[in-house]
Image (cartoon, rainbow, N blue to C red):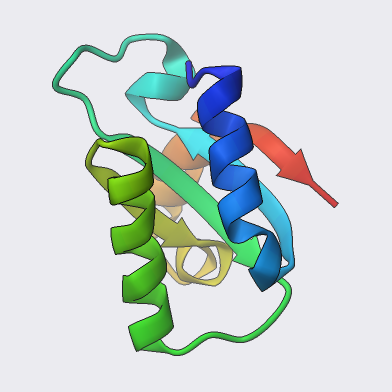
Length: 98
């Protein structure tokens, strides 16, 4: 599980983008993470962003957290196959919801 300090850092960083949901999924959410695990994040932002902004957010989060981050938007999840959606929805732990 992510620490409260990490959660706060993620939320504070994303606030300018008016997030409506921020969730952690995968091994970290299940409590099965190791020192080599990445952090899987699902986000839904209240303002539109382009691909370059998305990449900047992704990179900034990796630097901020000093770990590899896999970043997925809620819209991308909705357009993925049902197996992927099911796996993520089973694991997800929301750290922020508006």
